[in-house]
Image (cartoon, rainbow, N blue to C red):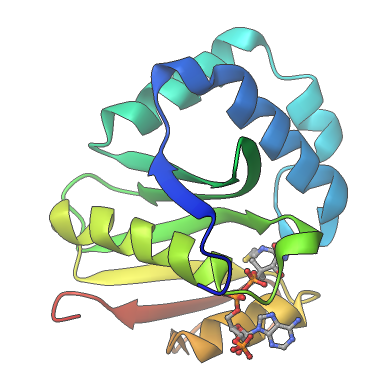
Length: 166
Ligand SMILES: CC(C)(COP(=O)(O)OP(=O)(O)OC[C@H]1O[C@@H](n2cnc3c(N)ncnc32)[C@H](O)[C@@H]1OP(=O)(O)O)[C@@H](O)C(=O)NCCC(=O)NCCS
């Protein structure tokens, strides 16, 4: 990573406010990138944010890493399994603050999700990229993710990379 001051760590139960504010910031900044809308996330009850947090901290089915520049949170990524025991894990909610882009931060966040996914038994890591998000498409291409065959041409593009041997 180009900025040596950046640190990446998994979330803890103390990070409730941080995770919520970062996610809302991501949804406001890049609504074209995510399925969830800012309005829906803003309306979500605190109990639902808590459930998300607890699931991600437990780390069995899902995971969340944050990136910090000093004390400021500047990026996040989530990993999850759509089905228990699946060999496919997914990376989602990947976001880097605009002023920190192009310095390898998302690559480092992806690496954190990949390590979690591999330790949790995944063989492939997948991401859904919305059609109107060419930068994310380029990011995943640069990270050696390739489109999964046999998908509908319209709608989000599913890309994946084998991680078991990585
Ligand atoms: C996509 C995103 C996460 C990339 O974050 P980032 O920290 O800038 O990415 P990195 O610095 O790790 O980039 C790694 C490589 O991806 C490619 N890439 C990233 N951003 C790019 C851009 N704007 N144009 C072209 N290629 C790009 C490049 O190959 C880059 O390597 P290089 O800088 O050495 O050329 C960031 O732009 C973002 O948060 N976008 C809004 C939210 C979003 O789209 N999330 C993804 C949802 S699927």
